[in-house]
Length: 517
Image (tube, rainbow, N blue to C red; front, side, top):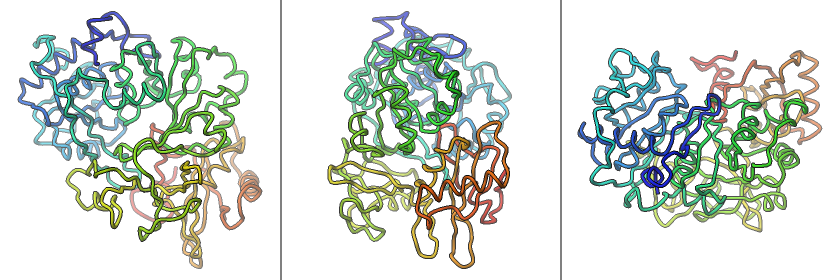
């Protein structure tokens, strides 16, 4: 199932709707345009297993590029639209992409990319052109809207966000089936766990370059549903979209919940959300207090999963399971969980350690980086892999995440995980966002510091800092509490919701190129 099926069966049905402008791409249009681009790429010499990239904001044209690659057996890399020219150029070159489709909206960066990727031979731009690019619309117009003679399934080859280092290309085997034979692994998962179907209206409030949004949007379209695409997340706009488009399914990150909950009651209570049956969240652990407030507001419709772009394992938690096991990210439905210490020894239930998933065999590699691939593997079991998360399993088999190994603070020889402290501080009604890091301490090695973004309209001063530190001491053990607290205008979160904590930490450790603003 893919747009080729729905373009015939329901040609006028919206495949995607722009949440703000209301502009629509029908399944007939999506099928025709993705066919034209597939024909162009074939004519340019691309064959199954080759690589292409896309560099766009959330744009309605995004989906035809995705489906053109998927119906051509290609690897598609979606490049973060907020990167610098050097960062985006690195990904484009490292991925060995032969074609880039960019947008005029990103022209300032896009115009510089050819200098970084000399092996990319075709440069296309939607909504206008700049030097070095052909008009995408004019280029595909030269090709017929006909299926390729053979349509092996393609797949994504995405890059890690780079919040703790340079992005890594995550290469997984290309599917062996034809694109029209099924809805793909994401579509199958959506149907099995959350009831996605051709009747689904799915709200996507996040940037499409990220793995979950583009995976869930393309899965929705494989099943014949309608995607409602927000150009960017905003609290009122998301609630308005649910009401206006009768959204049935959605996906979020915890910071979106926090921002919506901090709206004045009168601002968030005036929307009809009765069509909304399934709200999925992932990307980062959700503070238990925030999630409970969302249950109180939206009812028992919140589902959670944990898994990485590597797809080396996957856990899932439905509303009832979470309410009976607060803070869990669920039980595994892909892979067997092992919790191990730093030497690789397995730990008992309830003990925190590195989270490994066991599969029958290793199912991914980091492109051109065998050392990082090996680092992800267990010291003794090559088919046990970890993504750098720390957590524990309870006696019922539910996984709980406590933090990332890279964010752990070691103060006086004691391991302190920032997530617990952040989860406590975010519940304060004057805190909009918070990051907890380790900063240098001559005696202890590191000490705990909180960096806070306050709610709009709140004055930042020493009195507020003392109030927040006292609040932390009231809710968590004193040895974990921040010794000091600073304020920032806005924490450096990626649009995916992930905190770019390395930028904050580097500034305090005196590393070049970082600053607190």
